[in-house]
Amino acid sequence: MGFVVEKRIGSVLVSLVMLMMLWVPVSMGAVYKVGDAAGWTTIGNVDYKLWSATKTFQVGDVIVFSYNPQFHNVMQVTHPMYQTCNASSPIATHTTGNDSITIKTHGHHFFLCGVPGHCQSGQKLDINVLRAADVSSTPTHSPAALPPSTASTAPAPSPSHAAAPLLANQIVALFSVLATLILYTTN
Image (cartoon, rainbow, N blue to C red; front, side):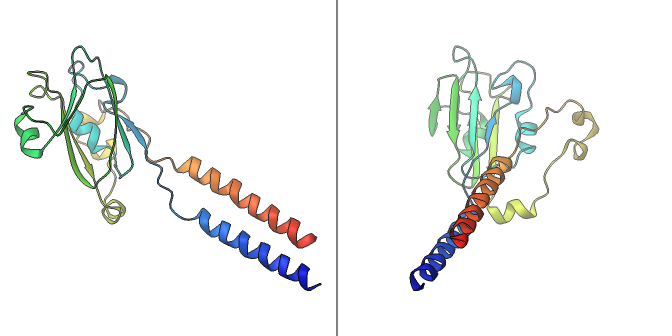
């Protein structure tokens, strides 16, 4: 009988530890395609400042630059270089046409197209990654909050962070833990 009680206590403790692990935040970054359907381009008057203002970026998010590599590139630059469209000594250069950049730090991340004239025509991007405390206290932007002239022409925001898959995984794991508890307590 002592063995059965120890087995039940042990299984309950393991189940509780598994249950607590479900609620530990998991770093699942969102994936954002820069410019949404238009991509990284000078065609179509994409407003990259507006595009980034409608997103809430976090560390771990992936920024995807999709473009024709014959006509564009992506350069990560400093703030002064971004302001003046100076592509002479970038932090990093990307040229594949489908570049995925994982955001690893908080703060501003500046990108521009290094092809002459493209940055000056608006092909530049400032990604601002707030700290977790700043994100919870910052209201999210919505088309209704934008000036009327841009509200109707603004592209729909990309999906934010993938909370649905995380919640679904937590529910499945919770049922697994409950099933384990039921099996061990009935034996």
